[in-house]
Length: 190
Image 1 (cartoon, rainbow, N blue to C red):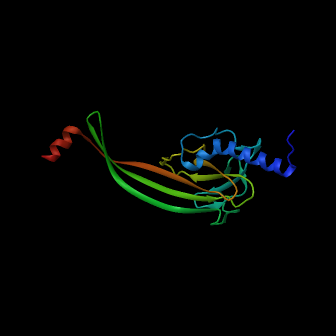
Image 2 (image 1 turned 60 degrees about the vertical axis):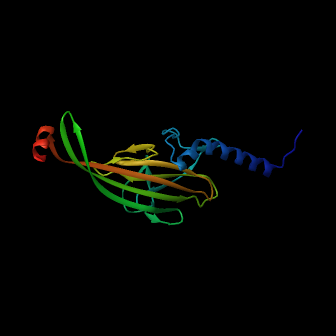
């Protein structure tokens, strides 16, 4: 019979549970579209991971109810060691499509940001990034949000103690500029 000291046994169980959780939750940090179930929080040894909620400005949120904060400014704290925005960009570009002989001209606006999240605790955690989605905008990200509550997209990313993970969030909005029938467009070009 193999004898194992209790501390070694506990450490071995922790390592095994970490490997199992990385198999299911590790895909979040690599941008994979394979997400764990949206309805169940990631677990280690059957215990739900602690969640750290942050907003689109990397403020650590408190007073979280039903997966989304109340939206109040109270309870907001910034800690760049835990969350900071690595890059933020916005751009606009024209887009032309033809549907059934009708030319449609649009301006597409893109807003992107990349979060750098670090687990500074001694236990595995799940970061829940709460990204507000303005009216007329759509989430255009890989990975997709694990849940959308009202006008807030929730992205869950698991991290082991000391681990840094990145999360890219993109949004887009399409604004129709004009519509021309194909024959009108041809006559304007002549």
